[in-house]
Image (tube, rainbow, N blue to C red; front, side, top):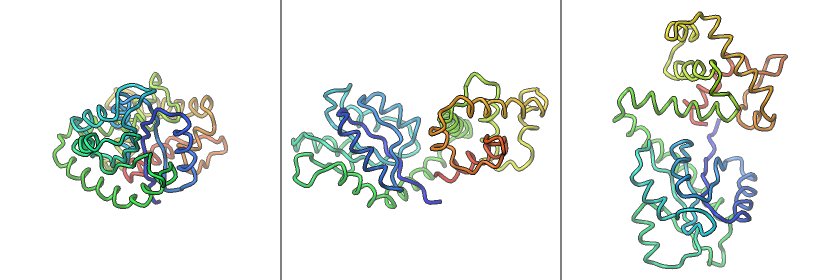
Length: 261
């Protein structure tokens, strides 16, 4: 399965955001995974979502912070890879442009140019998709070789929790932490019954671990909006109940995270 280019949009104009979302929805290769008008929140979203690319407005007059502040914070952040940064701005100062490039802007599109549009910005990133993702893969591999085992586990489990949060798995449920452990074990090559290993870790029976995980999945499928579920959990559900089984759920997310789609 070809991986989409995941984009974080940092923009303060709501109509502009809507146009970006409209054009991104028209492409099967592009996905906007987050939108914010706050440069400080944008830094948090980079750590949480690991987007491939960022469309960044420099001034954020109707939001908080600025694009330049975001670039400074991103340069100082300890992240597995630096996303590709496409700046779109009304600012025309060459000095500002030089500063943005110094702090990591990869390309700058002036909104004053006659041929500028949100569609052109999306088309540009789609054109760059393969190059961006290949570069990220190289950065990621380099980063992983310098991680300690504890850092690797922390980073991976944070990514897993981010994914299962999207489908409404409650952090308050016992099955939540068991699910994170199960997906982590499968990603790292465990082929035996992961619930046995999790039960031993938490001093629980295998049956109680399995029951807690399935209950957490069942509650999410009962409470969460169906469109949210279908947009995030894209595997075929074979159960007549219309809910993923423990095995289906764990292996779907293990493959999704491991293969980056």
